[in-house]
Image 1 (spheres, one colour):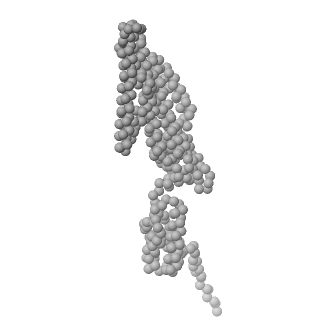
Image 2 (image 1 turned 30 degrees about the horizontal axis):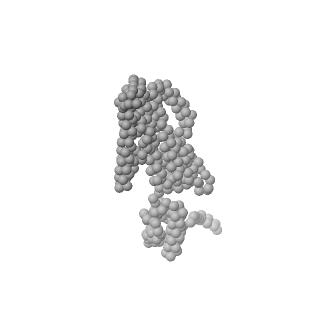
Image 3 (image 1 turned 135 degrees about the vertical axis):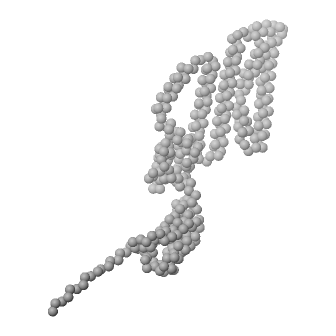
Length: 353
């Protein structure tokens, strides 16, 4: 058998040339991929950005079979294969390119999810993002499948119509579930609260213990578990005490009306000292506020640099004890509910003689 031997319409020399092009193309592309990956990894070690890591991770998803298909595409150029074979090779190459694009898209999603896991300590948030990543991968492969079918000559118009109608029907059937799912995604991304935050929702309150795909669970002060659907929770007005930087404290003290005026003037200063003697407090004001039915009332406002309710109560107790001691030292009496009754008697009638 010589190089001029005809095999399927081409000489053996042309077939060998085509095979050499296939092998050379595959080797060149593979070497190019390795070199670029090596440089990207080296660059990633010297920088703190994620772009070079992302490029290296996505490029690493390149399939050897895809490179071989590209080699076959270029290797078939010198061959005389009639009219049908080049179309088939071109179609296979396009399909391989679309599948490879799907692999690159999966690599992009995996890289993003991996980076999110490393920065996130909230396990429930990671579960939600895993579900989102899974749906993103499914959507990417559905798009790839439709493009592949379109390039293979399949009429996908009817298929798209059927998928659209089916999708609408499914969406209507699971509307509540999808609503809760997207609400869960909103909670994860926007972070109106996280695990451990103390929330008040309407007249219910508790500590967040779990954020799921459909519901969020709180543990109330009395110990029972409160379950909210994510949609209902986001549509409510939430008071998040977990984000409180400092707590405002207000208390009112009443003294008796027979307290001397000089001691009344001194009272705000005494109350300020009682507050400032405690750690984590920031005094705001203290004033004679009102004349009550049985007491002269002083209002004091201060801030506590800790959001914990126990800390607030401990400091308030210490302030109250300090005030009690100061009042005792100064001889100031606390007022308590009293009522004074004035009796007016009529004059006795004159006696007749």
